[in-house]
Figure (cartoon, rainbow, N blue to C red):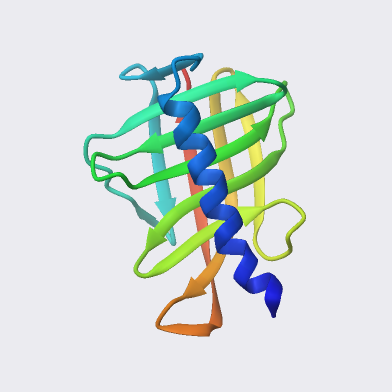
Length: 147
């Protein structure tokens, strides 16, 4: 059962890393030219004042999608034409912090790359704080075009 409690923490770590890179002066791209859509459990998330940042450095592509209220989504991929998903952080949705971490068990993630557009799909898992013994799994799709 311990692994179930680790997954949201790892997802939050991915989110923090992505948003930190998004706000860094070393960001390779980001801002108004980048586009993103995020769907969780079949419903598109509305992110007010959405800012998208993409950084490709040290063999990793870090994508941060932030909203004016400080919430956001983070994705870390390997670089190259056939990237792999390292982690996904979807933040807290309806009291559940959702994420995926490669090798942690629980959830899934696949990525396709078409030019500068990445599509990440899978299932994220987390814990419902109202019922901490219950693991929650939701499908997601993140589509990002980096400038």
